[in-house]
Amino acid sequence: MNGELGPLLAAAGERLSGERLRLVERAYEVAAHWHRDQVRHSGDPYITHPVAVAVILAELGLDHEMICAGLLHDVLDDTACPEDELVAEFGQPVVDVLRGLLALDDPERRPPDWAISTDERVLLLKLADRLHNQRTMRFLPEERQRQKCRETLDVVAPVAARLGLVQVEEELRRLASERLSGMSRVEPSGPSVAELSEASAAQLAGTGGIRTSFGVITAGAILLPPVTRARWLEEWLGELHALPDRRARLGFALRLLAGMPRMARTLRQ
Image (cartoon, rainbow, N blue to C red; front, side):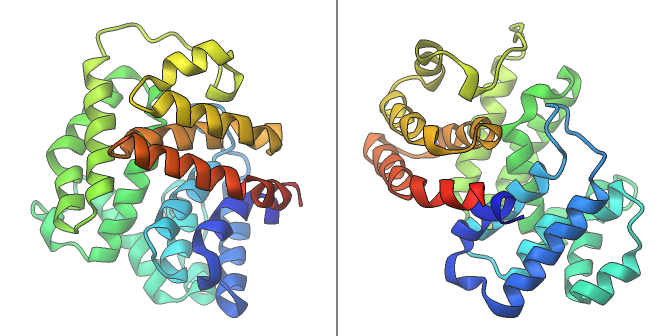
């Protein structure tokens, strides 16, 4: 479990300790149990998505209850987990956030003014969920990609802007716009980022400091276990694209490089 939660614990830092840490670890156990037979369109175990959503929430500085909500956010909708068991273990506030997200994802229950009337914690969970889905959207059917990208540009990104999450808004807009603009091109299925040749990875990373910074990150990521390396390289490449300039990207890469040995030790536990 520590290996799977390594990136989350690193993102949360000292905010998770004692009972709060125990609750987050328990949320992971519950989510992993109920999603145990599920896989994503990419073929990855489904639990990788809730963990990634929880990491985004931790990076935004949110508390342990929201991190638990991130780990559990698809349990009520996609599994047979009883709601009362979640209330007993994690409390009503966490489950209220989960139920709020369910209402947003149901067109028949979603109020027309949901973007301004919904509780802010539910919106934050929605943003984290959409951001990770937008980063990994290429595995979805094309029409669903198109629909989600338009919703991201028209509704979801403006919510991020209203909440003051400038970097989240910018990344959502960039990812959605790039996906829509490339929709007319056939995108061949192929290996993950970590499986690409060095030349192909450099071409994928592009210019403007992204190629250099991605090269630094790729070199450091050789320390990570192969089973998790591809997923994190893909996440970090998305984050590089969201940063405003070469200096910010290089700083991000160097910070990752400095923390890579510690992350590798955690993931291998």
